Length: 306
Image (tube, rainbow, N blue to C red; front, top):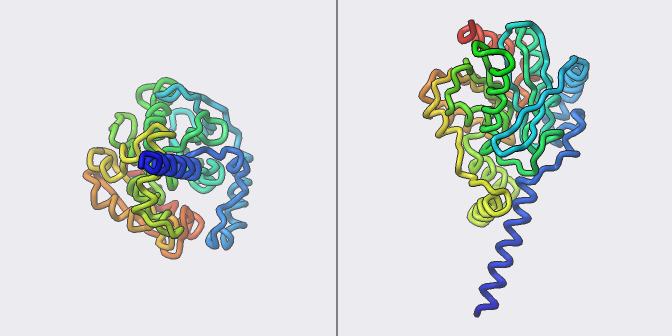
């Protein structure tokens, strides 16, 4: 009987380790080329527009900057300067993503609005240190590190906009609970409601029963990633925030359900605006209707920046 129990424990540990590697372990080299797009139909249809924007952003001069995370990792970002004294956007890319690809549209909009930007490389991505992607649990604290970097460099009166796409959108929403005085507003494009929720949704779409997958995911995160999957949630964070929030979501998003943005909106206790884009896939609302995307963001910024 003892051997059977030990064998079961070993099987569970091995399964949770492979779940951890598949879900949370960094794959830095795969994200280095911004021209590698997700293998989904909506990206194939809009490939040329994406590539043109990526080419444009790759030509924008930037300064390589660094900060330290709460747990001692060296994090890096591109600082793009447009104008002295301008508001600063801190831009957070998505899961296993590339910041140039994920923000080729958002950064163009920032530049057109006269905003400076920190286009960060999230922990465990590209040249930022770390090996574990925690779906916003630790990344939200990294956002706070970048805010503190910005205040130290640009002064106590710097106006900061937190902006994110996909996991980056969830990250900035989770960071909203800190209510930092320099953050004036938040733009979250296709966020998920909580790390647990999006992993459960993706596992289900891949045919894995959640009652088997999720305990292994939680155990793998805890034992090998050294974080609790349930330690942070957009839903809980927006109940505590005082920051104005703009939510953007494509109605044809096949990765992060648009319904998750509706859940976040309904939970939010601060000023919140939700804009959905018909026929737009995951993180492609700006491609589907750049004019409207631009107009919505400009209205939001005008209302909340000096």
